[in-house]
Amino acid sequence: MKYSEEVRPGEKIRLDDYDTSRSCGLTKEEAREKADELGREMGELQELLFAAGDTALLIVLQGRDTSGKDGAIRFILNHTNVQSCRVAPFKVPTAEELSHDFLWRVHRQTPPKGGVTIFNRSHYEDVLVVRVAGLAPEKVWSKRYGQINAFEELLSASGTVVLKFFLNISKKEQEERLLDREKDPVKAWKLSVDDWKGRDQWDDFTRAYEDALTRCSTEAAPWRIIAADRKWFRDLAIAECIVETLRPMKKAWMESLESLGREQKAELEAFRASRGA
Ligand code: ADP
Image 1 (cartoon, rainbow, N blue to C red):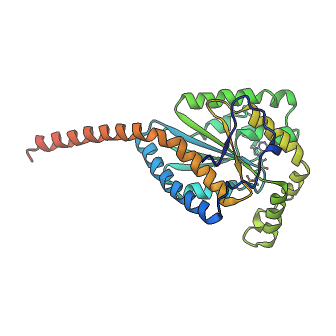
Image 2: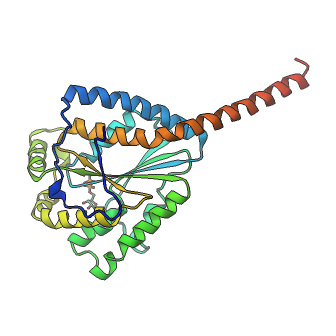
Image 3: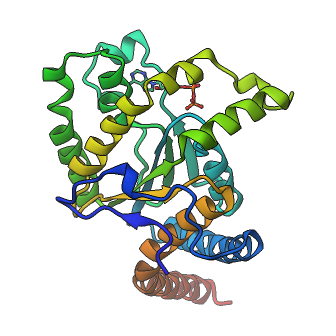
């Protein structure tokens, strides 16, 4: 079952066509159980990815405010080895970052072989908030779709698997989550006037997201749309996609680790023999 919806290269996306509260007939308990099972497999696959050291995994999380990026990160980190998994958040660029091209700060955060990096927001902000808030002229941001595709193609050709998730929530669900934050003293620190201002630009962000999803879904790095109104379904859809992407690599990783193991063992035996043990 495919719980996430992959955007095919060339496919024109209209977000109205996507159900934000999709759950494929699963109850919360069923989804949590499946997600935990997939989470365990994800952890095992990540250990192999780390040990084999020939592949990197970049997970890009984008979504409107309150769409659950932090929750999705918590889920992934709960099931992975934090020694080889890191999170890179992208906030309003600093003066230094702005004095470089928009990919400068992004490229230096990409994962090394054997590593996993989760982008909490990403280079896509440069065709989303930058476009909607008018932070750069159209002639600048409109070239970025092609530049992003070339960048992701470079990463992919260099051994990085790029998985991009758009967490898709409804305007209603966002309102409920923002109001919940006000009621919950533990979450109130997240409150921001900008979140409510962003709601006035909901439609502009929709157009910007549709263009990013449409124009930056390539063979190397397609977008996956995640129905995110239900947190438990969001986690399941992300876990499934990560596992299904890594699983086909497992055999080759095991083979390379077994052969490495044989070499190490032979070296150890030769060492022991040389000492006459
Ligand atoms: P989050 O909302 O991700 O939890 P913050 O509240 O710190 O974290 O928000 C980060 C802010 O940085 C967002 O409003 C986002 O739009 C903004 N941002 C990220 N990248 C850029 C960029 N390239 N240009 C302008 N603003 C950006």
